[in-house]
Length: 424
Ligand SMILES: Cc1ncc(COP(=O)(O)O)c(C=O)c1O
Image (cartoon, rainbow, N blue to C red; front, side, top):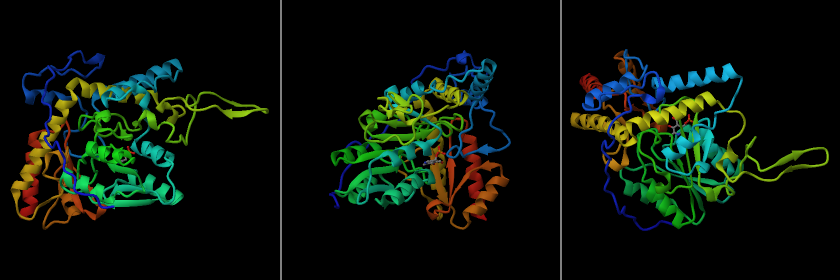
């Protein structure tokens, strides 16, 4: 069913400026969180940079893979670990649930704490009642973390996956999806931001389109939490998975899954454990599970790390100290600077990240006309830049991610390297 063209009604996009007055110098009792200079923008970000043990021996442009944690997060993990081991206790793994829920603006009981994005994706892909004949819409730019859980369920259940390649405008992306929708479409399962090129999809409009047609919407938010301000209720999706270890700057081994309350009984909990249930019994006479808690807690199970949870909670507090709008505005500013620099170089330099502001975030992906991407990777590494190559989708490209510990000088130095590479 190829639908008529849809136009995005409100394409105006603004990034909230720095509205917050400053950073609490007391730093919530953390040893290193002591940002005091809020008057001068440059000095402020220099102080933020000092919060990171991240080496100065090279420039780190790979937050899209792993976001290095600042000292307060590392301290929070260490202190909790010591506390638990001093006491022989294990409680506290729930401590990041509420801060995460507040951060993405959903009620507490709709958040399940996972170990990474992929776990959340698997819970949804495996838990939805999909069958042969159903259709799922995805992109050709998936990370393995979103591709494999759906491909696995396709193999097990026999549904079909229909694919589009992200275009450079929100409107085109909406229309590409609309064109793939049929009466058999059950789920749209796409990234909020692609890992390959940093395309930001028009998630709110996609959810509106889908819900009009009774289609479930899942977003892989690995690159969104901590890079752009999130309001999941406003976006209107049914499910959303992300992790702590990228843009949130939290520890590896942390993640979250949002499940809209109305979906609790639609998504079957495949793995459950203590506190997932409303009562159970195994005796010689009786074996029963009475049901699941009316809470996304039904999807998480077993002992988790209270230390990592404390780290994630502190990572959210760290970002909140600065203010998510300010974090977003700063990181986007750096990406825009780099994108503009690259665009001004002209030649046949190929920028794969959209120009349209609402369709990109804090990553830029590009290809050089006369240099293999792997050779450029080597050159970048020799010149002390940590970047990410993008072999996915046969793009053979170069990806740069920017976050709050980066600065304009680093962007200019990197641009100079690109100029040098282009001159040969
Ligand atoms: C878009 C996307 N989805 C999923 C993942 C997997 O994330 P995780 O390692 O948290 O499972 C990644 C990791 O880079 C990603 O970029």
